[in-house]
Length: 149
Length: 423
Image 1 (tube, rainbow over the protein chains, first blue to last red):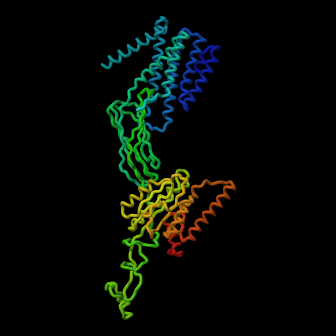
Image 2: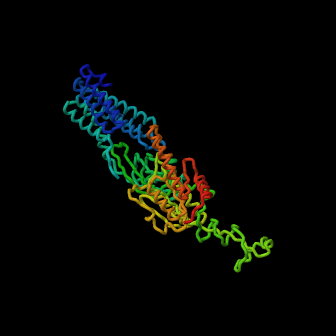
Image 3: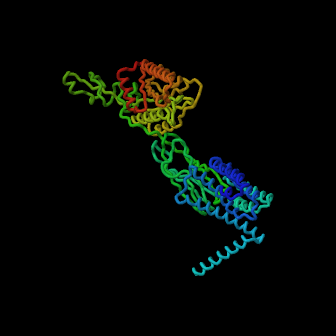
């Protein structure tokens, strides 16, 4: 839906159709795990169609798409785990959502870094932003370590 | 342990491959960026090491009564850390989980041993094996699972809870050994029977001095001796009526176990004939060992379907001693069992029939044809009971709300008024 809203008029219909198909397959994956593959494929195809039709110069939304797809896959797996008769030991139930959050964040970060690297290769603005953000982070870490010492 | 892939593994791998191919085809690096996290996850997920797990089961006892609680402890040990380990103990029919979690998911650190206590309730008599433990392990990523079953089975015998009985049925004939049954014959004993004139050889202590003084000649007391009896429990296992996990066989076994233990307490010799698709028998005997033998044999009893016609000739002769009382516990559903009981009566055995009513297990129907059929069936069964009574056999019906004690009172009442004809 997010991609359909962001897409141009030409791309809206196919992106929306693929997105809805992906959502329906994701719902089906809750009952039949084999539907997870088509679900992720349809959702990723929606993004590919958007890129093919709109042809943006370098789309930083790729990080968000990767994170969203991973979230769909992991949440489907978790929901199936919760539906089973197995009881988690006390204190163990929170580990899975923490792992999913970390994995989603990691996927977004990795995709963003890759897009940034591509941008560096092109020497465009996004790479400069990335270098600036990393430099700022490094300064903050340095200050924190010095104040702790 | 068996290695298997989670549904996500295939989906992630396909997505990573399709994304990379599409990135090349469309010349869009963003698609490669989308595919990269999935490719990384698949690569890391496939590196999951095989967990080294050991598990064993401790059960606090091997014998229990229906309704008892049994404590079991599943212990698992690992040499390498396992992020999520699901441990399940397969519970056989007749055993329910009362306390604890089963199956349970735990996390094990390196070289950790964990005990998982379970409290199990023995809900139904049976002879089961407990200890089929299954394990399912996965690492943090969880794309690959390792599953295995460990056979740590040990026997658990769940005995039927005997019902409390105040009185039993007195057999028509007693045996020679000492017991608790007052025999109708006259000999040395405690129960007063009659008086008679003194004859040479009578013991002086048996002289009734008051009667002697009144009559002017020596009069002695005669007494009934306390003897034991041979009792054969005849369990009909040809057919049963069953609904929602409970059937006539369960009730029949409980009744048979109750009777067997009470007769053994009276020092009677008790045997067993489980007459069904498979014939099981136990020669009459007494004592605690015989009680365990009987209950163990009862636990093995099941309804085995068979077309073969069987009559009493297949029962070993020593299992049915002469002058033994036969207590049949039957739903009166199978012609072969009914014919065998009639045959036993015809051979002169003192026979008592305890009918386990199959009616509580019938499905109610509003169809007029079904209701008419039910009425006919009831009439047929009433006629069957009447035909047994015409043969001098007491028939007592155990319904849902009838206790064995009440049923036996019916038998005693019948036998008080309908004296057995000696053949």
